[in-house]
Image (tube, rainbow, N blue to C red; front, side, top):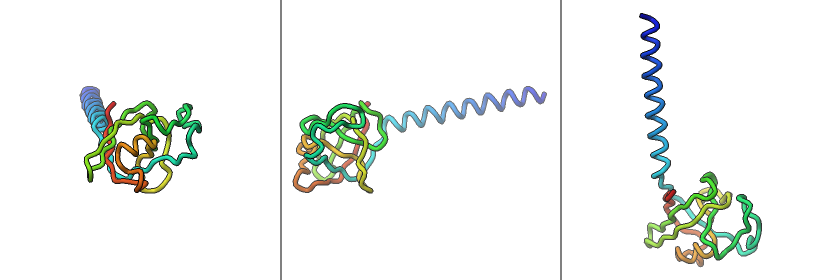
Length: 126
């Protein structure tokens, strides 16, 4: 009887772990982050990004601290409704409170060029 209880406990534990992993993966897929966006200085034009490709101010790209390279995200300004889709190809930003660093072209689409920063929501698309 003891072996049977252990088997049932093991099956229950496996089911709990499987359900938790599935819920965690789902939450990651629909995650929305809120914070402040900034954009790259012109001095980084042509510099090598963390993904190995050269940085291009005219591309719709961005740096994020942890999302995998190649991830597409939608960046939205809740105060204006402006949005832009960008590809993560670098790491950063390295300033506390900021959640994404955008190329100049993406910053223009969000209307934040003069301000330098803007409140945003970052939504995973991939």
